[in-house]
Length: 555
Image 1 (cartoon, rainbow, N blue to C red):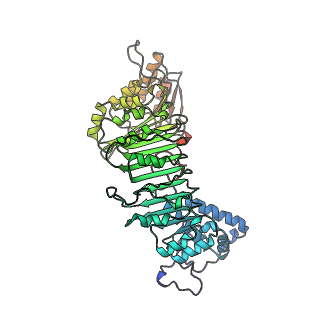
Image 2: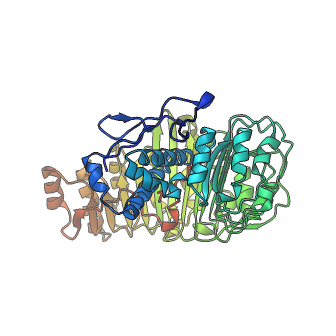
Image 3: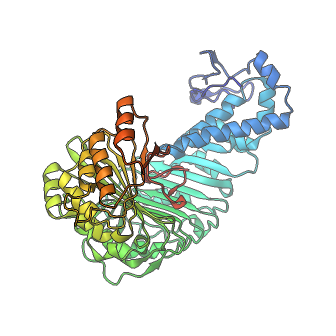
């Protein structure tokens, strides 16, 4: 349709009736681009050009469907970032204004589509808010507002509170908690999404509010709740809630958090990041069941918090668990990997695939461990300084990891960007007796020869090689040490432990191809690897759009 992403400057030019003065609210005229760097003033819709004239021959109903799809596309693309909520509001407002100012025919069609006007920003001019309220008719609203908003604007919106479908409330400073809570005391009959981001909360300062009741305890459709820097937990029991995120928040005690979570029996996605609580042990914690939970994220919390939470939560067998930065002090012994609460997790029992990534960036060594089965997944990330990494190795981080996972059941190992000591490889392969597939993604070419050397059969024919069931070796890139690879393949064949398949992701050059084809055992099958550069994950790992902390794929 020749429309590029609109570049808008907020104005009330479109919403002022003829003969009405904008008075003190008048701002820079709204402008947007329709391609070719041509700027238009929307106070008078432009005449249709030849291309638009062809589109205008479409039935108004079909043109309206195109407008709706265009709006959905812009909003869905905004969900890919951390500020997805605000961007979605912004894109929706911009698209509706742009479409209504291309030509008079487009404007007439746009005015018949209430969904184009259902997104409202309370920071807009009051007349713009009234315009969008009127044009949206009686369909659900998506509201973005600072809390507390301008009183006049809030009163205008309060009469339509029953229509609000999603509410994004934010603030940069809170003088009084009651001023925020007073904005959330209307019956939210259609509310499905609530996002509260109350910035610059000081957790050390006690709040006067403990457990407020929101929306007069009437939000029967709420399914997504995101709380960031909010100094209290609601007293509501949100039985319809499926997605909950609590970040940068003072939760008091773990017992109070569990009390709140006990009222959310249908949770499918739970995120707990950077939570503070009062000092002291949490005694007599209630047991909370999460029968429908699919994804759990816990990060940037003390090990005691994670331990108490996971030991008191009843988690399903099939789910995805992501842990990161479990402990704020420097980690050297990885005690949390050896704790009882980790080994007792039911989802760990059936894991069969393991991926290890170790990277060194800016003087920090980052570890990422991922294990998966057909229906469950587990990932833990942590970072250490190089000096602590030596102590971590001395304390046996590989052994700790293998004691946590069902090592005897692991059949597939992915080595992704391994940048650590070669001595850690031997206990790794020795601890995986059932391994039948090894995948190497060695961007730095420093681990590949060590792996080949370890997997080669020993000179003494009476000794078995490591990983006796190994049948497949896959290289994401072409082999950097083809001689070592050929020696490994031939030695295992001679000892009766042959590798049956060699998969290589990058096309070989002439010399490499000749070397492998001539010197490799004739029984081995050499072929191109598949297109996937990473380990296969179950469907449960695919989170919804807008998930900030989720490390795996996004729908």
